[in-house]
Length: 204
Image (tube, rainbow, N blue to C red):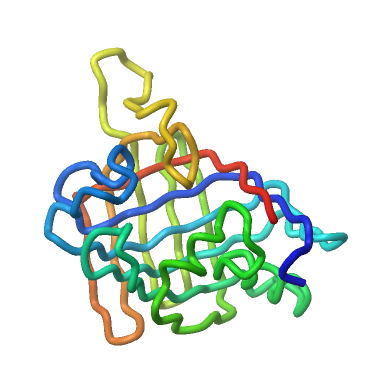
């Protein structure tokens, strides 16, 4: 199963504890987070996806990340929530992709994650209202991110042509809400760094 052809297209939002825009996007994880460690949640809306012959389209995924220092040094702790609408087969294939077992774009998780707290089913709502994206993951994550303002009205501030693993173009955003309560962690990253990224991931 780990060598199946898979692909995911959609959108990713992320909110972390960095006090200014995440330096990992440009440094590719070689620069320390602004507080020396990274705590984050992310949500993925799968618009179009499949693993072998199994469709993953229309499902949502969320993740918790707790990283003790520079991203490149590893020892990450992660947890997954997978859309409660997923079949058992879809659940297993999504878990393989988001743990790096299916290699490809997300294969770095296999190398960098030291502790995996597992995957759970949950209702996951990913809603776009204008430029605002909101994520609700059961009682665990309540988040909302919005692009920051730029000099030109109605034009997003973005970092383009990067080698960032999530995608080459990242919209600079800020969290309007960023509450996490899971696995003994109680976080609130409202007003802190956020990202919006169109994703096109493939494997193996």
